[in-house]
Length: 337
Image 1: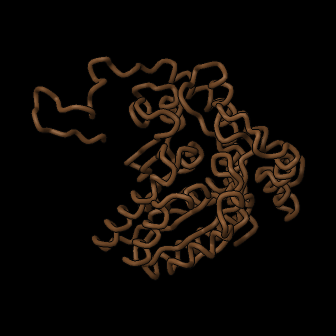
Image 2: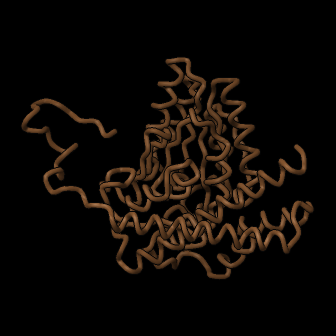
Image 3: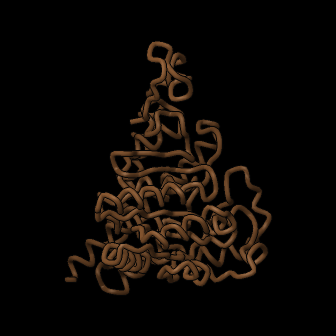
């Protein structure tokens, strides 16, 4: 690529990571003010995975995510106003205000959740992959899940079927080392996740999940393999969440010094350093550029909050919709559009 193309790519990736980081920080603030309720799982520190993986996918590819999916949804192009409205439980949210933080969904962008159950999205991803396989579609389903999913039967069943049936599924494990709150080595006899995935006959490799460029490159290579072979592939993305598992988590299972060490590998300043090291921008120009981006993101977040505040709650008469059969149409089951 030319210098101009490298600059365009790097700044686009940096902008999206900044956008996700500021959104997450604002959500933490709003949660503390009780304006966002329920559960809240933040991906601060893991932005390189969201931006690197999702940014490499085509519009036709599908995504299945976890309950820590705000960054994935935003990187996919789900409008921030739609995401924030869902966080507020408003009818204009991407899931109609019914799902909240853990159940973001946008079928128009082939973003199929947001799943609150650990490993719950894996069988869904295999189903989507099977559908594309049967119709001869060239799309790939990218399934993001955490290292905790390896302790669930759904991972092993899904990996086995995807490999057995030659399904176009890209398994992306966000290994943040602690699942919900237990260190990987304290619950798994074999901690090399790529070896375990490869045992199902999948090509598998590990990637520095704190390096957005490495994540994007690995994802592009994996997608090319899946499209060419029709077989699944596994990526282990070694990352780290800087905040606790959820807003309810006291975070007593890891040392503060460890968290600080990982913060030294923060993907945002790391990409800034790469821009400077490769001479794509001067420090002055980069600071000026980031200041402009911060202002734009701040305005976008403010607009999303204002829109969510002004949006209606779901009408009381609709509370049983999608739950029970409507009296005026016996036997009809509605699909969420």
